[in-house]
Image (cartoon, rainbow, N blue to C red; front, side, top):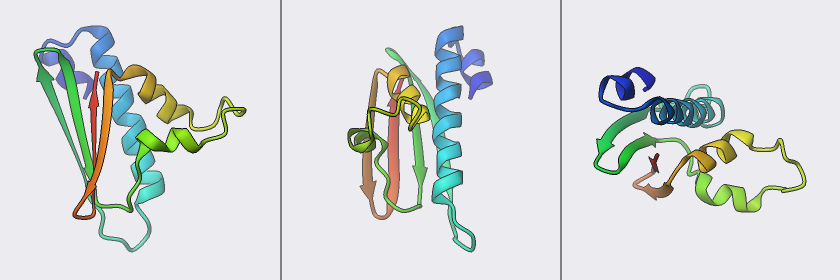
Length: 109
């Protein structure tokens, strides 16, 4: 993701932000969504737009909405869910849908 953004005109901050967001979300999907013996897949698409960058991440794991997940965490523990918090702070917007048993996460940086 970092190289793609750099090769397509992304500045340093945008490219690093997109790369960090992709790494964090994809690692969470691999760590918590993919279970032994399951037939799982993940698809990542990065797009340059007139206003910045968008990334769509799809997977066929159990439904998980990181947008609303943070609303239910314990704010007293600052280290809890730090990766999702980081992605949330980097993004201009994040949207989530779960359709036909597919998680669809759209992140705009």
